[in-house]
Amino acid sequence: MVNPLIWLVLTILDLYTWVIIIAVVASWLISFGVINIHNQFARSLVYALQALTEPVFRPIRRIIPPMGGLDLSPLVLLLLIQFIRYAVVYYAV
Image (cartoon, rainbow, N blue to C red; front, side, top):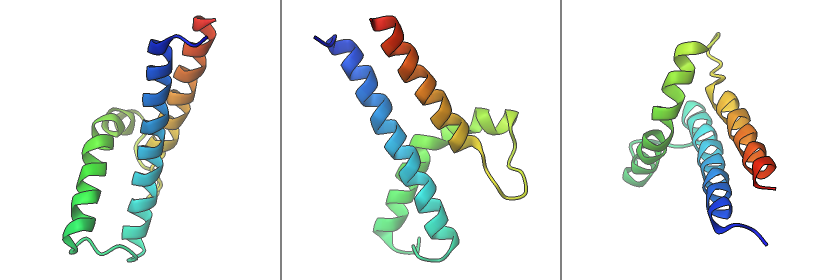
């Protein structure tokens, strides 16, 4: 039987993982000109994704700045989320 609080924490971490992945893919699509941010829906989606991810990316970028145009903050954050997931599951048992 799974503790409901642990289930909630793991679900939120899973959802935030998908938000990070979608934000990274959206930034690539904007960079390659596939998504036009002059479109109102696309612009609002990109702004929503930035509002959800930038507050968490910013402290990581202060420690590990983008190197040659390569931003490693999403990767670091995904690794941190996986660490938190395993820690929650480990200490829940």
